Image (cartoon, rainbow, N blue to C red; front, side, top):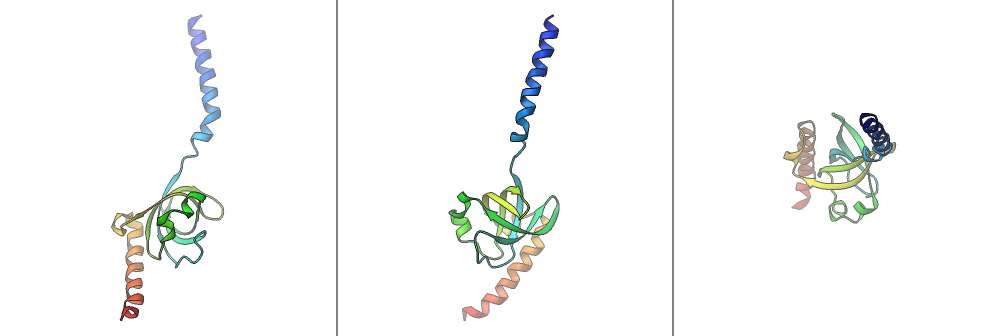
Length: 129
């Protein structure tokens, strides 16, 4: 009889935990991105992002806590970012953001980040004189 009770309790615990797994499985996705255009509207930032092993154009949509973040307020073109959040229809809902050095990006984005920095230097350097 004790084996029967043990199995029943195991099944009850498994069913109970399986009800909560979708909530736990909703973990944030980590995405690396490079800002591709000058961000005029901080609530929708265009970026090249590495998502699911492929580089694509993506709109970054910050959450409420991110909009006040100094990292997000000083965002410029060519900034390299490590983002956490969720992929949604409109783009990527950002829940955490960190600025990275371009050399810390995955190889798939390093070429784009380098080209972006060279283009930025060529366009801005003549204006400094």
